[in-house]
Image 1 (cartoon, one colour):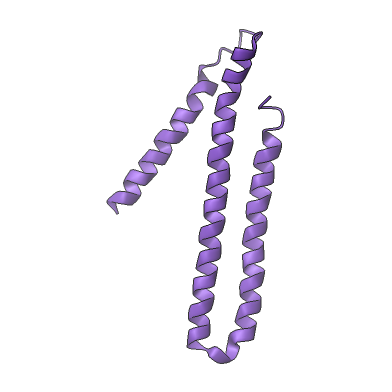
Image 2 (tube, rainbow, N blue to C red; image 1 turned 45 degrees about the vertical axis):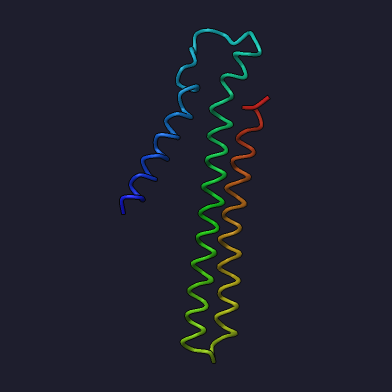
Length: 115
């Protein structure tokens, strides 16, 4: 349990660190140099990387749990193997579709942020 708390704290610290460049920008001053423009987009790239990683991690965990549950259900009732497999494939496709949509939202959100 201590590991889970430490891991959550590390994720929060990483997210706070990634937000620092976005929060440090002065909205009144126009960005005229390319260094300032690349500095403002640094937080967007880090945030997108974290978001994509979490989307992939969630999809992997979801599909793993679906497979584990399906195998345990087949082990308990082997005569229902066909129905369980069909339901497992449908649920895995839904989870994978949600992950792909999350990645597309992240990619489309970065179109104008990173030059």
